[in-house]
Image (tube, rainbow, N blue to C red):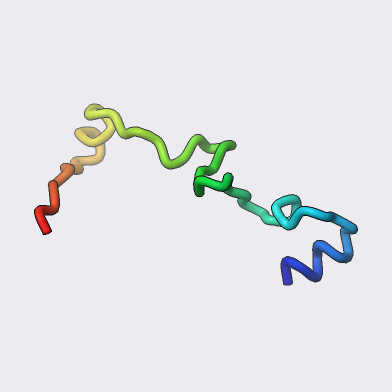
Length: 54
């Protein structure tokens, strides 16, 4: 479907068609995601970061 829309819109880059484009590093530059989470945000949501020792 993406490639079909690319043809219809006469675009050379498929990233111009994606609704939620990501950079080459899988980052959403518009939403600055993924981002570092502050301790206050974790506390507000009652979340805890647990290290996985596998």
